[in-house]
Image (cartoon, rainbow, N blue to C red; front, side):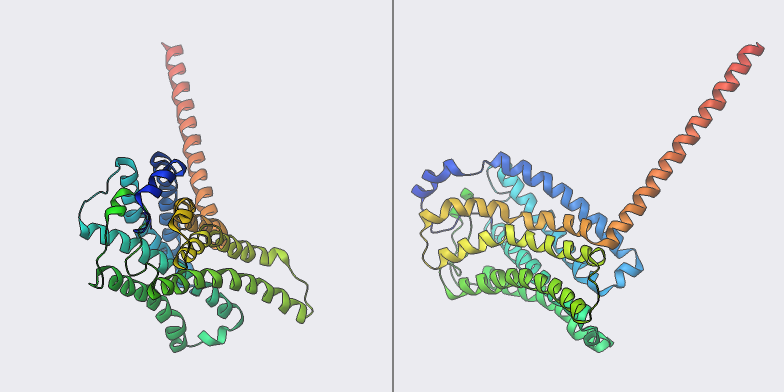
Length: 339
């Protein structure tokens, strides 16, 4: 969603370009966060996939899928954006490339936000209704099938939107570096469906169900007359609120502005806010793995262990080197004295 809406006029673009974020700022900030984010994804995936206990934990399965989606997105869509910002032109000047670009941009983002919305709901099931997934058959329908069905639906839906011959898209404004919106989305029912079902509702679910999970924990403790052990629940609270804040801060402005445009907000009024909302929009992908890395207690514990092991190995290697140098120096002095 990095390109300008087809309805925005050239006059509006030229008059508002003074407020735009410079391509160099976009390039260096995106490059910096993309490198850190990809490195973090690889580290977290390594720890989750090669540790049997973490790999088999049900609450980690959606996180693994989300990280793979983010990795593909940050190795495809983000480099294409970086190239366009660096050189001022798309990497390939073909309609097929433009369609693939916007497909990846929309489909992977929608799949990610929808999956995490389900992850928050599933956390309620894992915490308070574990009997729902007690058998293999129940886990298949409630857990595994839904994890697979959500991204498959998103990919099929956007394949039909972008590769189906339903209307003729213009890529003139896309090439100019604006915000691209499909001709099927321009103030149509499909545009409203996409905003409400794929962006607004998942974001609302993330925020509401994250808060409800914390409230349910507190209510259960009070109902059972048990003291609330904040140290025990602090990790879960920080994790859920941190990820929820990412979606709230970086996704809600974009969704609200596009929703307002769908219902009559003029292109002149929407142009500048959309530029900044579109710039911040990608930080959901950049920051998600960082929050996962810092807020999941199992990952943080593994990273601490790996870091301690690495530092210990470095210390031992340094001690051996010092000892070896000392012995060599003593031998040299002994030989010199003898001579």
